[in-house]
Image 1 (cartoon, one colour):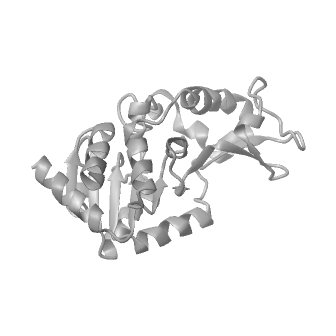
Image 2 (cartoon, one colour; image 1 turned 180 degrees about the vertical axis):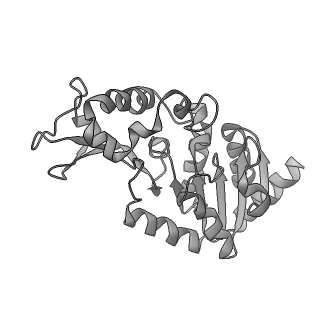
Length: 247
């Protein structure tokens, strides 16, 4: 089953006029970043309600140490794995127009991908909730928590989407536009449980595109949306597919 699916998926990618990738937590697990959901996930250890925007604004001194531990200490050690590198290679070869990712770890950029729409934001920037100025994360010391805004001393918030916060319009628009144009979408490491992000492959499908799914197990996409399902680890199956496409 798998080799047949691999061959057909590779053929679809070779012929694609506009191929995109849609990635989730599963692509970064092999880089040492745990998923949020499921056993061993972040929400099995930490209370997700603490990462709600209103709670954060009321209790920054309680939430910031958790943010540092999860999103800066753990993410700071992570390196791109073969799946991230394979997608960057596909883009460099002119076979991938862009990536829409739900991840905030910037591992796609670290791997060399250039067109990355970060649907849920990124740990690379922070924004002051008082003066609205953006700062690169590396310019902010996390020795004092909460870290004060260098410009006005206000409360800094990581520039990723907290619970109770909307998706930035520009990213949503760019991701949806890409999905409408794509004739192939490579879905890796996500089952589409998080909306509205999870609708991106459905938009591709609705516009007549082909869906190639790489996941450890079947998901809500597998039976309704996916054309070719490659079961297994992202770090194994993605490079296999890219090798089959680029030869």
